[in-house]
Length: 362
Image (tube, rainbow, N blue to C red):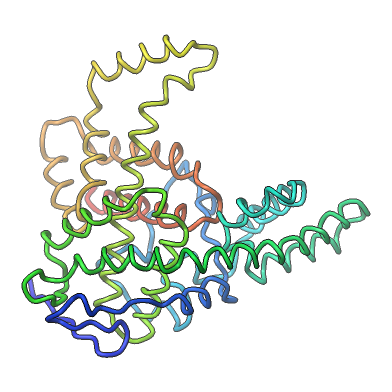
């Protein structure tokens, strides 16, 4: 496999023989992108979870990427490249209704979790449309108050975000630095297995709470800027960061879900729930679940090889059973994330890419 050596002189500034001189601080770029007029609606509910369909373009796909499909100035995340659908407008309406009924002190937390949606001009236009269509004076007043409160809240959230940008940028920079060859500091693409493992190790040292919307927005902004500058190799590295993030986040969520599933059994005491969990653990994990866990901690470039090996063995894992396991994860994990959040979009695209790979091997 041919690998390309990346030298950057402008943005990002990378000195091949001294990785400590890498400069990737772009808070102003991030802010510009976070509150641009680009539509930012890629909600998991925009496709039928009951029948997952393969993705055609995704910011997480490493093979056959056509970088010209993402116009300059737009996010590399697939859902940020188009106008909202009818289903997504429905989700906006749901958010508007909930926010209009929320207490003012609850708004900052709600807004920060879906800043890319609620700060977009389209969201405010939808509030105005709702107000014009309503014949209820009380509802009109609530929507007007919501629009006013959102402006103040977004300003406060932006101020807080600016303080977090430097910390998150440093986190992303550490992960990206791990992609450089240790001896020379050079970036070689496609990345070797050792470099991907090194990136995963660095990412796992970052507390999950710090792998938040600001962290993901930083990666998305750097990926977009690299695309604008024609640095396709760096775009691929940023895609790899998102892939690793998605796999590790989903793996953690699956572990937490397994630990708490029995406690959610209606009407059962915690002691009984714990006994049910112990019984399931004693029976051992299902083969398809084991395969799913392994894939989540693996470089996506190795997915096809691993799945071919698993499907060809007598381990009881088929394309259908693995797809069903992805389906369960989608329903239990992804749909539980905040609608409109980047975490939801990134993890959903990651699983859609896995389904595409599975279907290609059928």
